[in-house]
Length: 69
Image 1 (tube, rainbow, N blue to C red):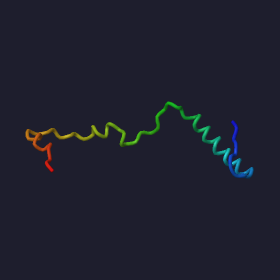
Image 2 (cartoon, rainbow, N blue to C red; image 1 turned 135 degrees about the horizontal axis):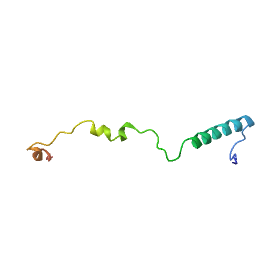
Image 3 (cartoon, rainbow, N blue to C red; image 1 turned 90 degrees about the horizontal axis):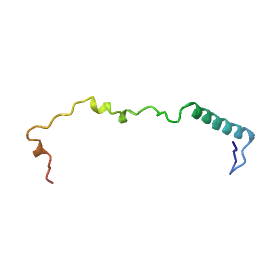
Image 4 (tube, one colour; image 1 turned 60 degrees about the vertical axis):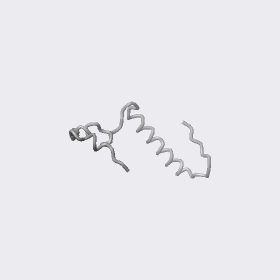
C-alpha cells in the first residue's frame, strides 16, 4: 500500500497517526464479511406494519375517498 501526500507538509507523527487510522479501518473491514448486512433500521422492518391491524373499509367507504376542493 502506498500513501502519497498531495498537499501540505505533515510531520512524521501526523503521518504515523493517519497511517494508524487507515490500517485500523482496513483491519475492521477485513474482519466483517462484505456480504453481511448491517443492523436493520426499525423503519425498514416489515413486521412493524404487521403489528397493527388496518381497519377494513365499511359500506360507505367509497364516498369518503373523494374530497372536493
